[in-house]
Image 1: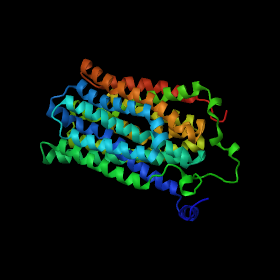
Image 2: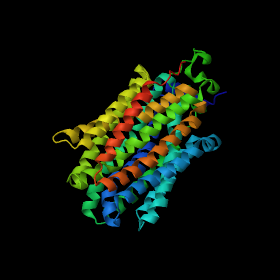
Image 3: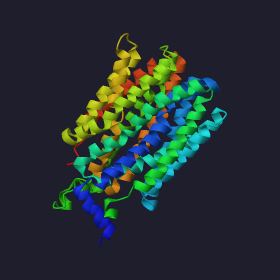
Image 4: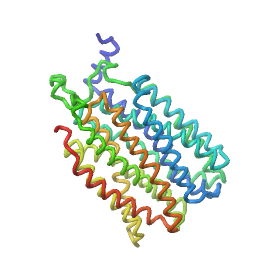
Length: 416
């Protein structure tokens, strides 16, 4: 039987806002903290960090790669830990780990101290991101998942806006601005952990609720949640993992090195490059909700193909170094689809395997995604070292997203 408190939640959600949307709001904050601040702020911080610590391109790439190593380790463990302790506790612990290690990075003196700390930051990001994305399948019916996941991922956009303005400002007022920024961002992440623990819940049933969009009159056997994992060919899961790997490999090259490219190769000031990076953040606020909703309406694979096409244009435009509006168009193309693929993939995996298995399967494809993130920035840094420019790295990214377009368009339907 539901408790009186649970029944009040049920009545409130039926007449007002369903509690699932509060879960999404807290999830957006967690993505803002663990990925937006813990990872994407690095692109803004690298020029000043590199100058202060006398880092080469490849060493800058190694810092980024260290974060993804930690992320990779975490996603391998997420399924078992989440099953034992619950998503809410795991997300909170992950945010605390990321926040505390970011504070310590602000106090670090050299590369060899930063790398192990940033590995732990990456682990915290993984412990947060995988279970929060999987909660979408628990709290939302299939035809609502793309939209819900889309609102989750815009947290990274808000963080990019913040870092694009905050880092140049602090670097202007202090010679140790990048250190102050790491400490301040770490404190924000720790604060986000407290909020997420207070708001998040592992299941709608804990509050006496049904998932958002679930029609109680429809038999469970006819709903998408009833897909049986043994009936889903393992090749389909590997197919999804390959697509997510290609996304991880390519998007992180741009996110890590676009600011460095503008400052060190195109002659932009750090403040001007920060303004461009903030525009990526503004544009990306549309990426998750718009393309997540499109995937609900027109299908996951068609929307994935569209997103990868736009990303290919972004990478080619910056690689070609054309005069005029090419840089602006590249920023626009990258930003408008920036976080759409994670939201679509989270919804797609929920469609394939149902909510109870989403954490494990999404964790697996995120592991493959993490491998792409590890190799992407390091190889981009090595290519830039050997050629003296990041253009070759962006050409590589555009070729790989071309392959991703093909793989997306041949995905089988979850209903088959």
